[in-house]
Image 1 (cartoon, rainbow, N blue to C red):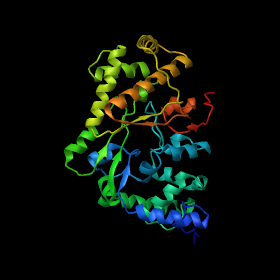
Image 2: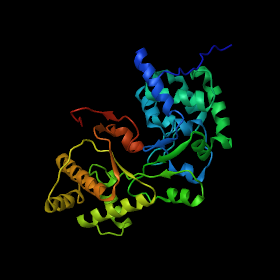
Image 3: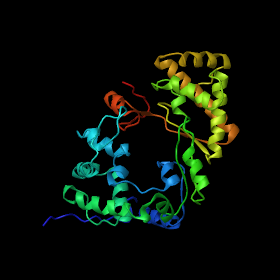
Image 4: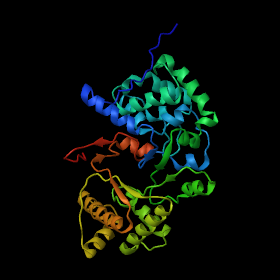
Length: 341
């Protein structure tokens, strides 16, 4: 007989420990807990809602796409290819979802005290009704329960959207995204409100290895030449495309909050430099800072709210980036000083 620990979520688990303050938190929570969810920054894929296909399996839903999960496992010696994370060149990674899930379950204790653990325990207990803790001994039980649920209509994306009383959720797309999935949602007749948000980082950051090619494609996509003036018009046009897809916000993942307001002549000269070849750190930061001001100007004109995520050093692991691509976890939040070593 395998002894397992119960999974129980304390109703005050996210409230302050001080009794008087906790009572205030309880009263405030009671006034909002049944209201519809409005999510202005949801990490969801618009394809889910466009085509409403069942999620493939527990690993594909909860491990493979979540860099907060596989970052922790990678930090403890689990290779990303053992977790099914796809590679840039298409080389093979582990494709057995149950094996991936077992690796995760064996190390679930590593997530104690993290936001990921609090969220996942809620998912396991509330969404899937599991009442024992996840560990090596319960890995297969978890996998079987979740996998069976995912095969039912009740766990399709649109059904979950409606079950949890979501009024609106915003996804985030890059400037080269044709927004076809958002168009499919609108044309499907489904009443759920899924909007996009404009994240122009790939065409704002000269440190992106594909920056120059991205800018060329970006301008062509907007029907503009690749001059500095055409580049700015391309942003204005793409922002309009995003607003037509429901966007009310932009999203910026800059390495710092630095801003610069260059003269038109200075900006044009700098743009010519960054779109001609590799530049130094100073020029890259100056261009990002200038374009952040330009994004603010455009937001004043079109009313889109700016979401800023400065101060995170991303993609510092060269080996991971070379094999698996950008934004595969291991982000380092920094305060005050921005470390790029």
